[in-house]
Image (tube, rainbow, N blue to C red):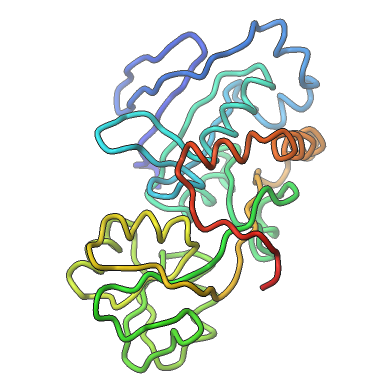
Length: 278
């Protein structure tokens, strides 16, 4: 966890630090303008170190992706984190972890401040959420020749179904599957390799990730139906109560103002749901 790649984004520009890779800083309004946008207590609660540390993981447009051959980071977590930092009037540091479970662990330890993730009742015991920003379908990516032909018939005897290690999908599907073998994978890169080699017959998570994986696994396809929904929201660690009203108002502002939609479009996010039924 502590070996995570750390990427600093500062208003003055990018600086190469030992063990870190710099990324282009977002355009920042004058300090006087940003300083008036958030109460002092909100800034102190949400960015206690004086820098807003945004936890992300690579491979999901909801968190962080890079175009082929580019170092530019995009993603809902990345862009909303940058926007929040501007409105708070503090510099932003994008901190990249191998997978979501480590992002959440870092937030609980106070090593990261904010992220965007699936708002579940289980996670709400360890982090605080805003209202949902968008909904994603939970689905299945099947490799060529897979015996899995639909999300609703995922429990095929002997089929090896991959999930992200430590994810909500792992905990939910572990209770639903009795015939198929659930295989937690440490990273999305590992999932792609396992699908290519045939070690996995299918991979189950939200469709935003599945479409990204499908682009990397020839012959695979995202199945049309779904086995559930994720409701993405901004999350902060417990004990940030003084900043929660501001963060929740910010989340509503960027949802209503179109920033969430535009961030999703720039990241190439696919698999959003137009309804909220399971």
